[in-house]
Image 1 (tube, rainbow, N blue to C red):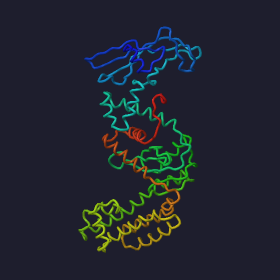
Image 2 (image 1 turned 120 degrees about the horizontal axis):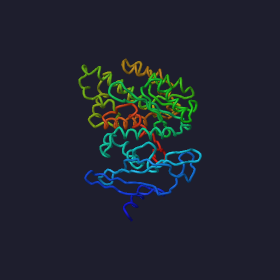
Image 3 (image 1 turned 30 degrees about the vertical axis):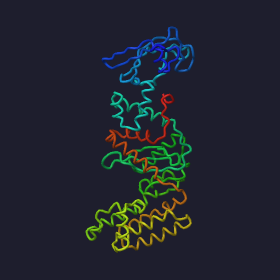
Image 4 (image 1 turned 120 degrees about the vertical axis):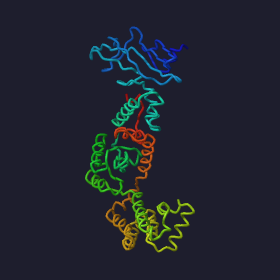
Length: 406
């Protein structure tokens, strides 16, 4: 088999296309594959699909291809325009590249494979291209895949925010809790992001009335947006945020008492953990605290440990348990714990809704960790669009096959 035949097989060429030559320049570390079409070859009309169209004229084009060992490889071809009796003169599209791209499909597939796992700038260094050109590839395929995504079966949605850059800059993530995929990424964390998600849902075959359950934290903006935008949906307040609310109350109490009780210093994370995840040292401290101390921190920690049993209750006893815990907390004379209990009272139905829906944003917390890890590796993203694209690549479960999204 000659080298030209081998490259033709590697590119998946079929008649009338063939490899007409190979230019190898070892000093410049470059390989160029020359592609042509057979004399008298005919093509399908790119507009109407009519067969047997002959070339009208040609234009030479060039695409970056996968490296051949350590050599940058390019594809150069004489691309025809064909004469169609119905459509007139139309340019033929290269079967090895998508329209308007300066890269072959195989090169773009490589970029799509690497981008979710490493910074785009690192991918650019690896393939020897400017990262701006690679971002164009990623934006194209993500936008094209999202355009054909179907959301008519979405019933349960989780919403949470994650930091987009230093300072108070956030993006809101809307996730299909049943399919474990990001549906929409919105800039900011206001009630307007919920309305933006509704419009996006409807653009993909869904409707506001189909959403039956929404899980979120106790953000007033999210609550207002959900109640206004998804009137048929019941709100479940994320159990992990509720538990964090109680844990934060314990930490505020500890910090208020550090000067009076110096033994509390250095044990912040011990009191935020659950007993089963504590080290032996932290367990000894917690046991001693509960056994001997009469401090507010000890009583707050006791309230936290009892509240952990709330989510283990049978559904029919859950409200009775919560009511008893609430009365205990508001009479505890611990300001931070009283505030936490009153916050739970204001969100009573949403807290209890967990026993019906059994949904949480644990999935979202995991996705947020992946997003923050990617952001840290990339040392941030220069624009919201770039961050959004990476989030969809990591967690959107999009069909990104280049041959399907040309």
